[in-house]
Image (cartoon, rainbow, N blue to C red):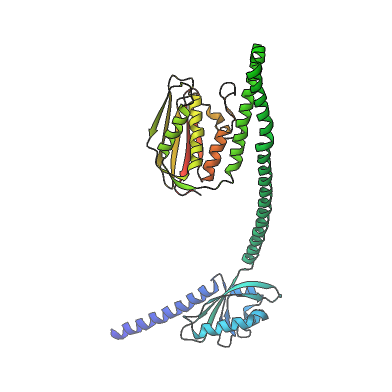
Length: 388
């Protein structure tokens, strides 16, 4: 019985050995990568079909007759031999992956990523040749595209810088050249009203008052345009901001010039913000001014300022019970000179909300609005915990 078991055991070992060799050859042949087994003298003793395709030679032309060194270009050969020797002497310490130029039978150059392994207990080496030529071509194309993109970015940046300089020159012109005649017009109209009011009829007085009103509106428009143009260049001075206290301060200033309009402010626990104090004050000034203006026809204008914390940013809002707006026009709200109400009905330059959006964008936040006709409006803005 023991002899039979021993005989069966030996047979199983032979079967396993046969299967292992068969499996080894199958795996070697179907590895998907051009692979060779070479002797200590670099002669190729075994090559798979993928290496046939890569080299352009048949197996019978390669095996036991060619060295893998014949496929490495001359400029890379010395370095490859050094790496191969180092890998054989220190298989666990030396790097196993290298990149070289490969030359096939037709004289074509291919970019190859070579992996060198040493078969334990032997002097044989396994070399796997991965063709990365197409990848290299793609890398070169991407590099070329990046260079072109960088060139375009530089050109575009130069154009923007030139445009900004032109805008600064325009701002200077607006600030000085346009203000001077306006001041003169306003001054002369005041003199006429002061000195000759008794000699003018009602129509003439109406015209002079209209001139003064128009010059005032024009001066405000110039101020708003200048404020809008300066925002891009103004450096952010970051500090912690108590939104609730800042909103109260701005509201009290506005309330003092509303000429008896009944207003009520509700502060609904807005979280502290991080940003430029003067800029965020400008945001609240514009939003609260709008809320005051558009609640003018209400018995009591109710304005609420609140907010809540979020992941990476806080959200704030200014809500009112005013005339509201049609949501189909919400995209027009933050455009320069865009108005949803006539200037005769509600004064303004149409730049305030554009300034709000520009400031919030400078801080890396977002701004949007919700409303319904005759049911009020709510303006939202976000401020990241760390301004960008």
